[in-house]
Image 1 (cartoon, one colour):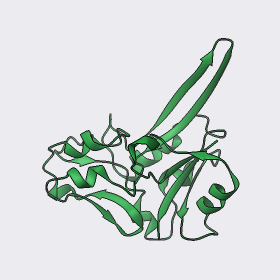
Image 2 (cartoon, one colour; image 1 turned 30 degrees about the vertical axis):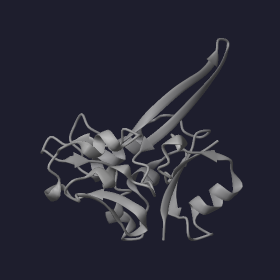
Image 3 (spheres, rainbow, N blue to C red; image 1 turned 60 degrees about the vertical axis):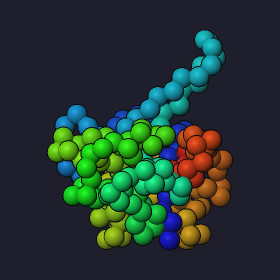
Length: 177
């Protein structure tokens, strides 16, 4: 089992429903977030292209954040989900510096926090909070080892890219183009 997420940049309208759903589901403190919206404008006027993306921890196969954690608080659980055990985190920030996606933040309670692919929901057979509320259905989640999962089907049928492939982290968040 290898969990992954796809994000369709042709469908996302930047509404931030995913951000609010995540904050609510995971009791993220005001002013902080585990996922966020990125808008990139490319080209030269008048030939501009706008790309809107919902970004989060990429739950990489090659995890620099886990390797740099001195206490083992950052670790990988079943399905390839990268987690932080808050009670073991000393807040040193090594994992924040190691992450090429800026996907971690210092929680006001003194530990590092990040997206968990809503592992508590996934364990119950539910979608992640962000996927469950997306009004344009631009987000999908599933098991890459299951050829019939939504992400497996989308990755077979569509062109895609990942953020910072040169980092060598083998991210498990794919952007459909």
